[in-house]
Amino acid sequence: MIDLRRVTDLWRRCDVVVRDLPFGLLLAVASLLPALHGKGTQVGDMPARPFDAPAFVVIALECLPLAVRRRWPAVSLALVSLGFVLDQFRAYHVFASNAMPIALISAGAHLERHRRVTVVLLSVAYVPLALALGRLGATERVEGYVVFYLVLALAWGIGAWLRSTRAAEAERRRHVAEATRAAERTRLARELHDVVTHHVTAMVVQAEAARYLTAAPDRLDATLSAVTDTGRRAITDLRHMLDLLKADHDTDVGMPSAGELRTLVEQTRQAGQPVEFSEEGSPAESAGSAEFVTYRVVQEALTNALKYAHGSPTVVRVRYGEKEISVAVSTSGSGSRVGSPGGSGRGLAGLRERVDALGGEFSADRQAGGGFVVRARIPAGSPS
Image (cartoon, helix red, strand yellow):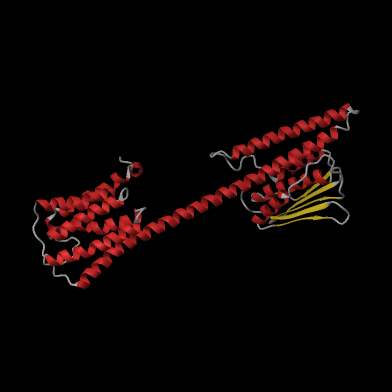
């Protein structure tokens, strides 16, 4: 059996001239049918005359150029116009003369350069055509010529409208593509910020602490081992981020969730930050994106605790409800900032955007007695 999809695909791959040629040939064949003699587009109202040898030349001039009406619209329009003029002078009124409005529509839609010049030339050439037909005995009145000119102008206008519609659609698609790329770049920038900042901050703090443990080999070895483990986790997370750039990646594979919070808290403790962690309830099966955002909120808050309140007691409380997840991360004092890298403020801004995108609430404030508190209310039930 013939696979219609395959045939259609092969047809679309053909050159545009090949795809347009059958229409011109079909119009030429139709013009030879006796039943369609005298059924063409005409101006001047001259009586039709029988076919002779030049009639076949006229049919060829009017039909075959339609094959290049999209590739070379100016050439197509010029040849079809020549055939149309000869057709009117000889009064064949062949069915092929209907190619004239088709050529005008195609030129209006596909002609790229000298569009105004083309319109002016065609308009100016129409006047001597009407005068010549009058001398040959045409009985058409002036208003008839005006109406015919308006019909031809309408054909050009239809083509111009198709052109503007196609251009508007191409512009819309371009804007959509740019917006999609920008959104994807923003998303990847946030992920890289969250991953790199957290791990690098932990490594810097751990390495700084190791400078003061030279007199305690056991503790020094444990601290350096923690730095190594943190670096390996950073490499693993970065590899995952690079995998996301592949066209065939699975966006759900390896994405952190709220269920990994205990691991995150333990990593922060290994970096020298005392963290108290508590959970209430359990994540809903439909939590989806809410779990991922919850993880990022806690991760960024703990990163800031390492940066700006190193050594200060930190409390992480997460409560899972039926419709939302509540997060609160706080430190009780400013602690120490020795050796910690500075921040750009992008982390908290990115978290606010993440939470707002899910319709939640986010706040990050300093406490009266020192330290800070980060709170988030994240609606659950948004599939990732």
